[in-house]
Image 1 (cartoon, helix red, strand yellow):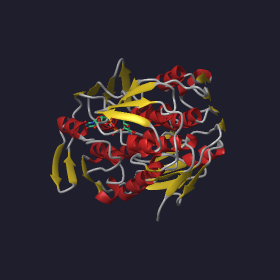
Image 2 (image 1 turned 90 degrees about the vertical axis):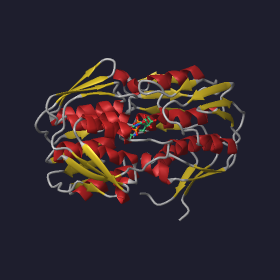
Image 3 (image 1 turned 180 degrees about the horizontal axis):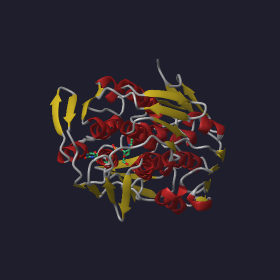
Image 4 (image 1 turned 60 degrees about the vertical axis):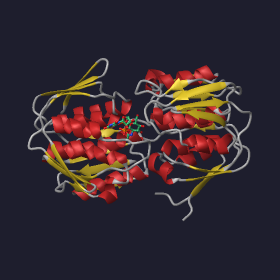
Length: 424
Ligand code: UD1
């Protein structure tokens, strides 16, 4: 079936949006439940294909999962997990499935998993994960696409990450919470989603401390309890919706946005000339676009720097800003694929290695474009709202993987956008 999203030139977006739970927090939190024996309840669970894949993954291990889409609640009983095997049909659906390796090794001392799939953003190796587990005493053998891991007991050691990888930090933490002794992760990722996982693990009974600037210290405990947790709101969905409002010259309120974790992004919007007002205690954003946005330059960085996941959406908004923006992607080596699609819509962008130079134009034009990953898709939706004529975007499975109802949310804000696909 040919699935696509159709977008027409839209009036300025206006209204209030309820954000979903964070995609990058929910998946790892679901994986972390493997560490416990019992029934845990997660609320504010976003509805997306990746969440459905993770449900299937947990069920394939033997967990009992009840998903209530109405109340956005997920109940996971992990006491019945009996398998440590995950085949390619599930693993290849998303890269985040590698996050079950740490919990499986910690609880069962073994795991038998296919190599993961997910968005194609350059090479995306999992060498930090594997090397770290090997240093903790795990042994690995690989046959075809299957990775067999074995560890009679995991050792608590110091891990020095060459790069603050989000997934490696999370996986090591989940392996270390049940390892006897003291583990340190030095140069750890401290993304807000990593900190949501820290909160979950602490609720389970794990002993975790953070030491500035980016060290995580874990004292192993012998067992962990099941939990109740409200998943943090999605800062990347918030950023995407704000940029959609920005490109249409609109004004929107996001009362649940985790504004305190979005300061670098929001300060760039102010530099463009937009108006950003924070709610109380770091939560909530009220955004009002300028009608004459200015170009800004930035590079993507690990948190608290500019998030790579908002690079493509921000680039879309900068296509119509006055002046020249220079955007340097430092996190991934292949995350400028959306440039070709934005060019089809009339954007003036030149790529040199990992750097894109965007010269603002007066108008974009609707075109038939293809989303190559989740955030590239978001960028094209944003550009389509301001483009003259109709944009049709295919590759919508990426959007379904990572966003919970972004099309109806944009439509409710007056976006002229419609989804032509079956809901997942
Ligand atoms: C997570 C997010 C993703 C986001 C990314 C960076 C989830 C589900 N996904 O992905 O949306 O774009 O963080 O903020 O949370 N690397 C290695 N070896 C490794 C691991 C990573 O070289 O073993 C490299 C990667 O190729 C990449 C960089 O480190 O260039 C960052 O990757 P990482 O932080 O691990 O991203 P993910 O956890 O996969």
